[in-house]
Each structure stands twice: as structure tokens, then as C-alpha cells.
Image (cartoon, rainbow, N blue to C red; front, side):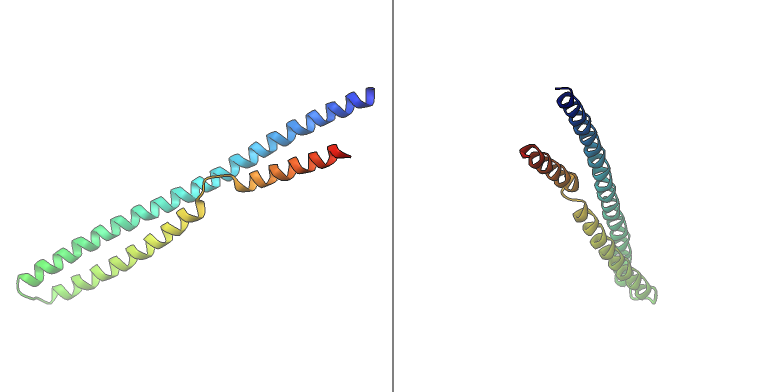
Length: 126
């Protein structure tokens, strides 16, 4: 009877430790996904800002063209195109970062918990 009591105590301690470890793992996983989502959102913001400046440069180009074509319009057009290319690249990188962070579920932890439950069930059958 004493051995059974010790086994139950050991099992209780192990389950408690396992649950704490799984919760810690879930917290770490969610923190990492949150960082990725934040970084991707920041890149989306940067893409919007660069696109805004591209639009401003394009507007300046149109104004200069309408005010009788001067050599400065070509430089403004080139700058606008470069800014839009940079905005597109930042937007694509930001989109990929956000996609990598989704869904915000600790999938690795869930898989680990399922494996732990299966192992406990298997040992209980013995």
C-alpha cells in the first residue's frame, strides 16, 4: 500500500511539473509569434510611409510637368518610382512576417501536450 501511495505522489508531482513546463512553453511560443506579428505590422507601417512620400514625389512631378517641363521633373519621377518599389518590397516582407506569425496558437505546445497525454494513457493501460 505504501508503494502505491508513493507512486500516486510521484505521478502527481510529475503531472504538476509537466503542466508547468507546458504552460511555460506555450508562453514562450506566443511571445515569439507576437514579436513576428509586431515586426510585420511595423513593416506595413513603413511601407505606407514610403508610399506616402512616393505619392508626394509623384504629385510634385505632375505639378512640375504642368508648369512647363523642366529638367527637374525627370529626377522627381525617378525618385517616385524608386520609392514605390521600396514600398512594395517592404509591404511584401511585412505580409510574409504577419503570415508566419498566424495563427496565434501555441501549436508546438499543443502537440507536446497531446503526446504527453497519449504517453500517460499508454502507461496507465500497463
